[in-house]
Image (cartoon, one colour):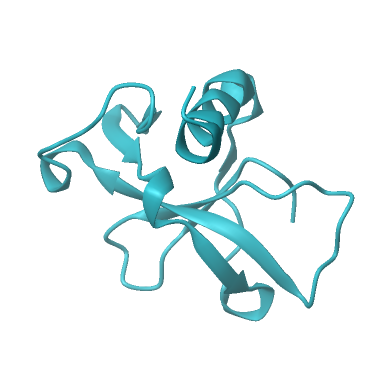
Length: 99
C-alpha cells in the first residue's frame, strides 16, 4: 500500500484514497478518505474537496470524512494519484490548519 493509492470499495459505489505516509506502519491501518461521485457530494467545498477523474468520470475526495481503515479490508489499488499530491496536501492543510 502506498500513499495516494486509490482503492475500490467493496460495495463498488466509490473509492478510498490513501492519505498516509509510507514511512509509518501504524497498527496495520491506513488513513483513508472516501472518494464519491460528484452527484453524491452536493455541497462540495473548493479546496477542501479535491476533484479527481476515474475512468472519465468526476469524483470528489471527501477529506473531512477520512478515517483509519484496517489494511486487511482494502482491495488492491486501481490507480495511484500522486500526480495530484499537492492538491491533496493543500486540502488536508485546510482541514487541519484552516489555510
